[in-house]
Image (cartoon, rainbow, N blue to C red):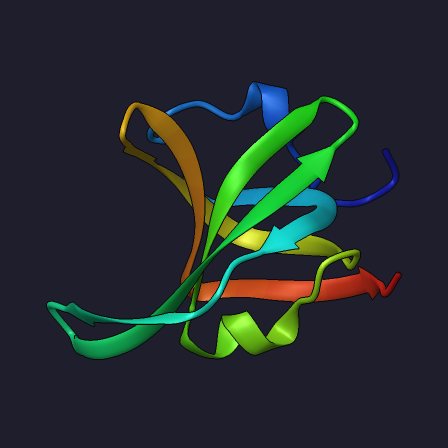
Length: 104
């Protein structure tokens, strides 16, 4: 790969990984819902990210929800993995970034 920070394939993602760069296609974006976090009220939506190796659940928070649509190819930077209901989930923290590479 010619990129300085090569990305991780979805099948390589493991619990506890941090500072990940992941490239994939959004195959689903769920409805945003209001939740209360330790930081106060927030919106969250569950999306599905897919690459040629598999799929993973992606939690989109606040403004991240409006950045993506089903069919978009995205690069997630500084993502981290949490386990919820025995399933790995990707999250993009406050220092993370979503870049839309291709729309539909």
